[in-house]
Picture (cartoon, rainbow, N blue to C red):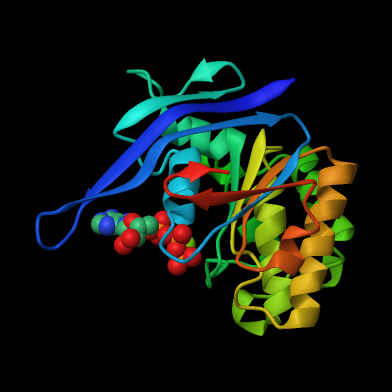
Length: 223
Ligand SMILES: Nc1ncnc2c1ncn2[C@@H]1O[C@H](COP(=O)(O)OP(=O)(O)OP(=O)(O)O)[C@@H](O)[C@H]1O
Ligand SMILES: [Mg+2]
């Protein structure tokens, strides 16, 4: 089942000298439910731009984007709601909020709509912490977490809304080799256990091996 489809996506940027830099040039992408895709590509090839478009954080200049059958670039689409409910993000720097505990950080997307998390939601947060082996840090604050723990908290936060797709931009970029391997193993496990669709950007050929499919962004299209 196709869960996500990009068709003929183009994105231009104006550079400093008023020259147009065409980063994406009629890019197509079709993703099946449960797929784990790695996107490789040279620095500056447009990987983060593509992920930002997938996350509805950036509008393309041309093209169409369907997620679970909905045309996201159409007028009147509530992008905040889509982003919060259907898309999980893992950034390179995990962006945890320092004033909240690990558990509270995980529950933040839930609290976009309600003052308190329900018992069921808290239970699911604990389930995710168990899956990612960080139950013992639930009440710790981000500054007291190791890098690997913090990135696992970020993974749990990205999953709490049971998103249709999980987007990860260089999730292992700031970790040492052993923690990087842990995060990749974790993403594989999540992909298999929860059947979460994952699109991950990585420079590393070794990290990309964990994905079921590897594509390369080059000359503005996926190859
Ligand atoms: N907001 C912007 N304004 C102007 N140019 C931009 C903007 N965002 C990105 N670009 C340009 O678009 C190109 C692609 O950038 P992008 O960040 O998508 O690359 P990337 O593949 O993620 O690179 P890296 O591997 O270094 O993270 C670059 O040439 C960049 O300078
Ligand atoms: Mg990038």
